[in-house]
Image (cartoon, rainbow, N blue to C red; front, side, top):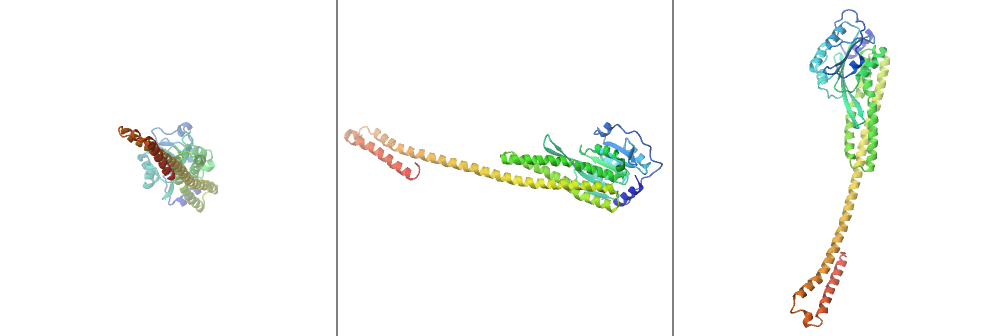
Length: 382
């Protein structure tokens, strides 16, 4: 790490802290096998720990204590310690060695933080939200990484598989000129990795929204639930990306003010441009989903109105049928009543003692039926 770069970082982040230094930097050592360093830890939170001098890995300590010891012997060196779900004891050790603020350490232990950039003395504390799209479930999975960035150290703390910082480490190790720019270069590389990971998420969400639009106009009854679930994912994605605009603006301002390498500033501007594009896209998704939800509610209301109309028509038709049945029942009831009464009078039947009695009974039945028919017809029942 050059003296100019070290002074620049300390000017940007605040008062400097000095490691006890003694002797020349260590000679390069053989790296651990790549597969061993890239794999997720099993029962150990240190994924990878390395000391860099002149943009090249010169040591791969096996423990935090060894990392501290080697770094003290390399005054021009830089340590990058990668942790996965560390416990309080390990973070307390790092806090004591690198003078990390207790509030930042507590945030790193608890996780579930919003993206942010804070300065504690000489150290930057950065929280980033990584995201990746799961094609199988059509869901967005979020990860979280915390960074402590000092003048000669970077500590990364992950609480999920994403982002894959092993790929970031390989990238910067294959570019010694970039890595020689120091801890700012590592910070840039991680920011770039996280932001690049947003592109597949944007594409996946865009495809989901297209499918939802088709389902809405197809009349799929389950689409309302999917709109709600996708809206929640978009809101969560928005919370992960929107704060990055201000964070990168602050970093760019600090880098420019204190004369950080011009090439690194250009790289950071490129990341900021990508973030702005992502944020604009996500904002558009939220507005579009709000419009889709409104259209879906309108279509559902129209469908319900049509169903109510159909039910009303069916009810009206059923009512008309009931009226007709009731009218005919009343018409047929009249002759039945007359015939029944006549049938019970065995001794005084009109037709037994009156020649016109039987025709009179028949005529009376007919007259009553005709009268009832006219009454019901006038009332619209027939």
